[in-house]
Amino acid sequence: MDLPADFAAFISRYFSGKMQKLSVDGGFSCPNRDGTIGHGGCCYCNNSSFSPGYCRSTPSVTEQLEAGKKFFARKYPSMRYLAYFQSYTGTHAELPKLRALFEEALSVDGVEGLIVGTRPDCIPDSVLALLREIAASKFVMVEYGAETSHDVTLSRINRCHSWQCTVDAVKRTHAAGIPVGLHFILGLPGEDEDMMMQTVHRINELPVDIVKFHQLQVIRGTRLCADVEAGMESVAEYSVDDYIDLCCRIVEALRPDIAVERFVSQAPSELLVSPRWGLKNYEFTARLRKQLAQR
Image (cartoon, rainbow, N blue to C red; front, side, top):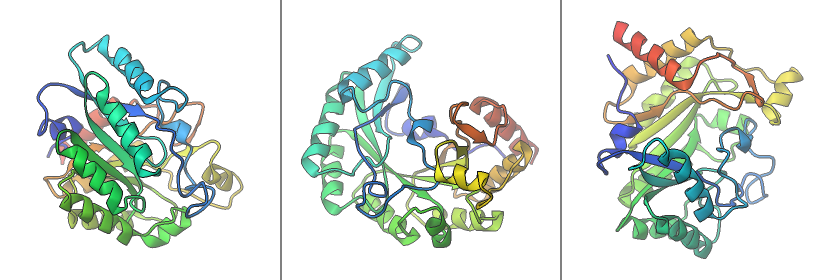
């Protein structure tokens, strides 16, 4: 058995040639931080752990994209790009601001589409209509942070939305003709492997195009880190081999037409507390491929 289709294989359904996502910080906040639905954010979240150095909200969207293009063009001169609104909640703004940001991104030379990362409780019909309008001429995908299908866990991590909210958002987005991605974290507090596999089976029931999984990382500056250090919370401590075994089980159970973008993430070393496996992402993927072949 081999890995399922990855992001490159997924995006090749829409484009020929090499495409690269360029992360963009649109200056958004999060409704779970600014009081719209909650305060404090998710217990594990430190946005600095996954935002590239060129991606900051102070420069304009155009400046961020041009910096990202410069970074990648040295190695791949013919690269084309997708603007990835990654930081915080990429639809948490008034409609005129969203339209202006998305149109600015698409006006940058070489940028041929949008990937919008957001929460499933932050996609009103008006925003979906805007994205559908843009999708009439450009590639658009929406990526929802679902994290888990278990409401008890969503409450424990202060996520402030339900699994049914994710189900509704995915179905409405699919009905609008827009590809859908989902993001999940493996090893959240209180979850065992049976619960994680239940989430995989629930993914299979949805019109999902691509998924991301990654291991729970304890990051400095988060409530989770403080709670773990204080002995108020515990997290699973996976070895690399144990985590690879879990990933193999997920591949075997996941619907085969769903692409998998990744199984691991790597926070900056100065922020990461655990797990510290000492593997680059490509090294982990090679070990996963080897284990799947043996199975």
